[in-house]
Amino acid sequence: MSKIKYVIKRSGAIVPFNEERITNAIYRAAVAVGGRDKEKAEELSKQVIAILEEKYSDDSKPHIEEIQDIVEKVLIENGHAKVAKEYILYREEAARRRQEDSRHFSKPSEFIPWAKVWRSLDWAVTHRLHTIDSTNERIRNGEFPHIVHEAETAYEVQVDTAADIIKERSESIKMVMISGPSSSGKTTTTLKLEQRLQKMGMNFIPLIVDNYFYDLELHPKDEFGDYDFETPQALDLELINEHLKRLINGEEVKIPFYDFKEGKRYLERSSMKLQNGQILLIDSLHGLFPEFSKGIPVNQKFKLYLEPLLQMKGTDGEYIRWTDLRMIRRMLRDSVHRAYNPEQTLLHWHYVRSSEKRNILPYCNTADYIINTSMPYEVPLYRPKLLKNFIVWEKRYKDDPLRKDAFERTRRVRKFLEAIEPVEDDSPVPGDSVLREFIGGSTLNYH
Image 1 (cartoon, one colour):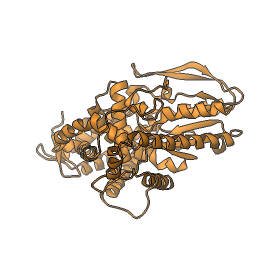
Image 2 (cartoon, one colour; image 1 turned 60 degrees about the horizontal axis):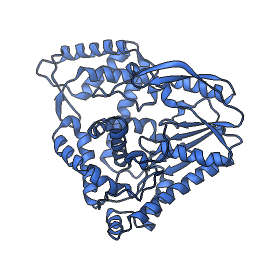
Image 3 (cartoon, rainbow, N blue to C red; image 1 turned 180 degrees about the vertical axis):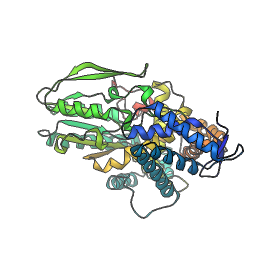
Image 4 (spheres, rainbow, N blue to C red; image 1 turned 90 degrees about the vertical axis):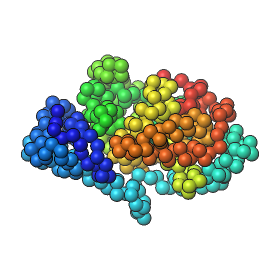
């Protein structure tokens, strides 16, 4: 047990010192450059603690930046230059994001597909769904079923367009990769796209990327000790690339199997081979991540990116954030299908978001086509389902310095859920809607 009891965060808040966070931070950096030695991370962490205890008295409170400086020093002195570089880069990126979040920039963010956003906003304005006030007016006029129809039609047209583009390029394409951040609707969209392409005479075979996860014990953890499934380094990217190359060359490969109950991967479990005319269909968070398919020629890949790019302004003049929308979707889905309490999803979302900003969103503009999976009618459906929870969470985390992120998110969501007209009857929502993936009642077979 370290004699250091508290540390000072960048915000100035004083929080309990947790030794494990240093180990996790070192291990995360090591994983990012291909390392998987947890014992070494623990050993290096102990060196950091020893320096801290030598430098500070029992009642001292070191600043988080000072601790991170010592971590860098220990990594470099122990010959781990690559890990130190990754650790430094991570710090610099985090500092840049904090700076960008604190003020507005005139330079467009590379994280945003601006052309698609403009078309989505134009559509929302045309249909009077661009503000909570205009949406409320339409709901009060009894137009909710019509709003559902308009939104679903707009989504289906986009899926049609994606299918047409793939068909046009079918002679060269060997794989279709459907990517996007958590709860973007990848599963439903993949099924709908496959149905369309099969009608066009194309034949697909799915590659389940989850089977390429490393064993759970080798996963990096976040600062709260949660396993990080969101990072691409949680996947065996080297093996994925090897299998992709062999498959498109007509070779047979042995696909691994990942047992989520055991948190363990079993290698070479099932045979897989592409027959003439078959195309790989890959649904993955990280399909656009460069290392995911670095050995595959560009013309042999079709990359589809999904995100709910909702264009709806709240009564406070701020647009509803896409990340908040996806968090709500994941809360609803995880509570039903993964026995996850919605509050657990809230508390883990900071790490989901951090990984997205590093590993998913920067590559959205490398996609061949983008589908906006937001449904303006989903917001009024969420109010009766979760508003009470967000009111409770906002009070609970208001003065907790360790949960500042959770508090800010709950406050934002509570504000727009309170402002929207509630709708409890979801019967106008089609059984095969992308939203059914989250609110339940889907007629599609996801297994």
